[in-house]
Each structure stands twice: as C-alpha cells, then as structure tokens.
Amino acid sequence: MREWAVNTLDKLWHRKHATGAAFPEDFQMAGTRYLGLAVVLFATTLHGQEVITTGPAGPTLSGVVKDLGGVPVGDVEVGVFRGERLHQFVTTAEDGTFLLSGFSPGVVPLRFRRLGYAIQFMDVDTRTPAATSLQITLKAVASQLDEVTIAANDRRLNEFYNRKEQRGSFARFLDHSEILRLGPRSSSDLFRTMPGVVISSSTGGNIMRIRGCQPMVWVDGQRVPGAELDEVIQPNEIAAIEFYPSNAGIPAQYTERGNRLCGSVLVWTRTQ
Image (cartoon, rainbow, N blue to C red):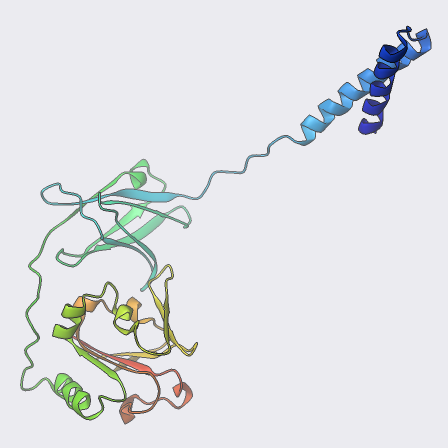
C-alpha cells in the first residue's frame, strides 16, 4: 500500500508540471490524503526497522603478567580449569596482556605457567571490577636444562631405552635431551611430522589424531582414558616418551584390543 500511495503522488506531481494546470479541488484533497497516508506509512516503516539491541555479553577476564622486576612476560599460558580438566587457555602477548571470555558469571579458577617461572594458581570472581584489570606476578625459577641422569634402579627409563634399541622401527622414542633440542611448545608438537598424524588446535590444547582416531595415553604406566596428551603433560615435565602409531610393537602390558588402529603414547615423567 505504501508503494501505491507514493506512485499516485508521483503521477499527480508529473501531471501538474506537464499541463501547467491546477488540480481540481477534489484532486487536491485526494493528494493531501495520499500525502498524509504516505507519511504515516513511512513512519511505520521506520518504526519497523528500529535496531533491537541485545543484552550485555558474558563476563571477561583480562590483565597483564609481569615478573618480579615489573617486566611484562609474554607467552605465558593462562588456563581455565573445570574440575581437573583444562577447559580453555590463551597465551599472553609480548606486552604480557591476556583476555579470556566464554564463561558464566562467578568464580573462575586460573592457572598461569611458563617455562622458567613458578606456576601460579588463583581464583577470580568475574562479578568484581578487578576481574578486568588483573595484575599477575610470576617468580622466575632456575630452568632444569641438564640431561636426565638414569638411576640404576629407575626401571621405567631402563625399559624405555631397551625398547628404543629393540623396537625403534615401530615407534618414535624421545628422551628429555632430545625433547629439549626440539623445543616444542606443546607435547603433541613432538609428533607433527609423523605420517598419518593430524594435530589441530582447540580450547584446551591440541587434539592429536592418527587416521582419525585418538591414541590412548599412558603416564608412568597408568592408563588415562579419553585424555589428550597436552592435557596431562608439558614438554619440560617429560623424562621420555614413546609413540606407537598402531598396535604393532606396543609392549603387551599396554596393548588394547579395541584400540588397534589408534596407537598409544607412553609418557614417563621426570618425577613420579
């Protein structure tokens, strides 16, 4: 109807200018009515296009991480935990700043960690103003860069080196010194170049799959069902690691019948 009123007014206008004649009184009255109708319709259309704003976004956590000397610390992992699992994480920028979002209002448990600094934990209430201006101070600690010394009674690593010598064609074996030389950011990065392995990013760390299947993770001989490698261990915490891309070559005590094509990752920590 709005288009009809506008078109009618347009015709009346052009007709007046073409003939130079004045409109009859009834046409003038009709034009006035059409004009009023067009104004009402136009106003109604504008009202219908009114922008509707949504409610406020969820809470955020932000701040800056510095060392004891007040110097910003970059590449710090800032993680949010749910129970015992890492729910999401970000890393600080070069100026030490970070921003987290995507959670409900309330207390959020955070963990701050970076190689060369002591791990720090803190609970932050997102409902307080301080949640968006956190000031975190990390204490530097001496890095353990020395090679692992295998104690005579450390049966775990003795078995690792025996398997590395005897089954090297079945798996990838890396000890602590080799891991340090590779300098991975995440534990899963150690296997990026292995055939068939696909590593993708997620909120809780990398996801590692081989032929679309999730490898079983074992830590110091204990099975960790459903866990991603990056969720359970950091590179600097590993004394040795062995990745079997299939059941071939896996020691009998770590073999799983239902996991033949998914392989296994055996992790040996520096401290039990």
